[in-house]
Image (cartoon, rainbow, N blue to C red):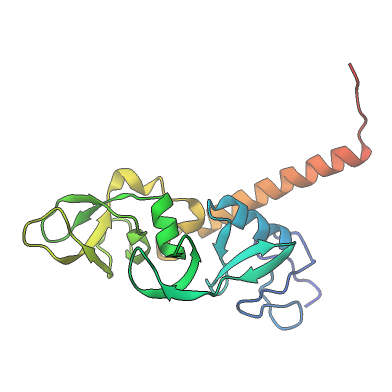
Length: 196
């Protein structure tokens, strides 16, 4: 266990205790450093992220990683979920920030949906398993959806489904950011100030 490094930056050996899945430096071979989890939450418009290990939602508050657990009826999807902010669950908040266009599997019409329906798609081109009300077709009710090809590239890297691949690319972007951050810090320690 002495050889462990953060599973994201592959550098840090100082780990954070994750409040969601219990990943601690004493009990798990998959570890994360505080800075990487903080960076991922800062990449999100809501400042909340899914734990890379268990996918429960966490945030950073007062330099600590905390769980988001208040439950209730979401005012968007009308389901019982953990309510994160504005009366909405994490997914509906995400969807309201990234309200993409989707194609209905019954009528083929297009509709903008304020919920991340792409999360339920096994691939970018297949229809998802979850349903949403179709307001475009005459005889459609709750149908299956797929995100339009033009919108796929607009999905934030940290929210692309694991089944689509790409998680390693997101981790690589965090590594690059963290390395740039370290270089700036090191330059500040040994550097000098030029006053003009």
